Image 1 (cartoon, rainbow, N blue to C red):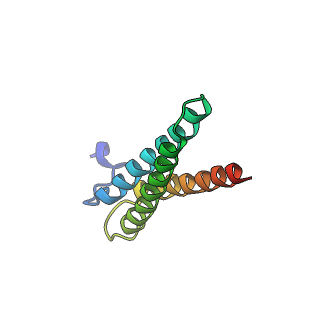
Image 2 (tube, rainbow, N blue to C red):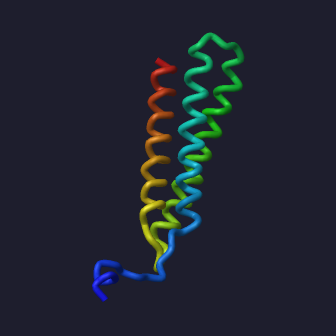
Length: 104
């Protein structure tokens, strides 16, 4: 059976918490983008966008927790949890940079 010599069959799955970590990371990145560019375009009510930035921090923290849970889950692939950890860490770092630049 030459056809199946290069394939490895396994019962491992992608953990749902890892996929949710990636989704929360993308929601956080999109929220931060909205919170940055809409006030930049001259729209009013910056308090609303500050609240969106705070929510993106909460999404990123929840995404990091879910990514860590998925990363250490036995018998599961680590791709989505690892991607979620990276995206949520970048979200937090960019948010901190934006806050520091805004405070200066």
